[in-house]
Length: 317
Image (cartoon, rainbow, N blue to C red; front, side):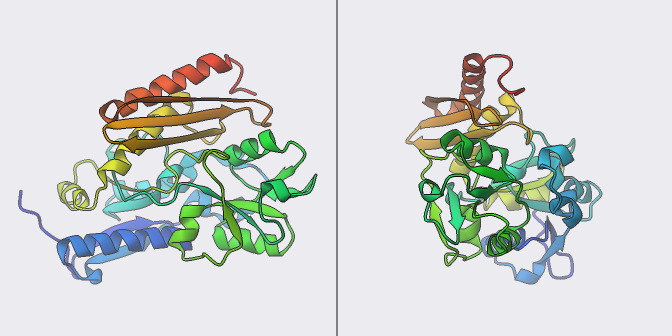
């Protein structure tokens, strides 16, 4: 099939959320596609779509995200725009993606993975260990909350949502003493001046697929498939496939604190994973290694192992 490339008159439409980080990821995707096919930037149209998760009234509410909805909060409207043809592809933070896509859509393109670590952000303290007893820490992530309370049950963890800029403003306003951001987000936004400390993955295992940009397309769109193949990063995809299989076998929603990270050395992949009680009182963790080609199976096997250790009531707590 002859590839018909987009032009300024008939641009490829890239759907994205409107936050500065989401736009940075969409611009990165556009730049890579333009370079791969020697096209002008005008051959691509960035289409901003407001999702349920971007509704400021809901984002600023005190309710936890799990009470508002699941990971589809940040993808539903964009995926609807793809299905009805308003956009051709969509760019996402892979950690926000549900483990299953709607019928007719596929998530099969990943850009080279950025730094996977979490960043501790505070205007007063250098790290978690420096926080005084009872300090207020803001996060909307159940994983981060549970991991933090597992280490420091004396801390007071409060809901803390919004984009990077909103959360930094909340720190300035004294809503919390500290918060967490993805190091990848700070890097992509060029915000190295933000007072932060990168947290080693041995101290805080990241979210599944953290740091990876995923690009979704219609399953029957051959042009998009051919174009995205040119910027697809195979090793990142292998790691994310392993991690998302682990997530899918455990839960796959925003309602369970889950951390996981796959690393590849040669033809071997090693997956570390953990699940925690919501209050951080207990953690079950493990590790598995095997052939890269068996990544998805390894992810499911580790999930089964952890569920067996945890017992039937662990995730319901």
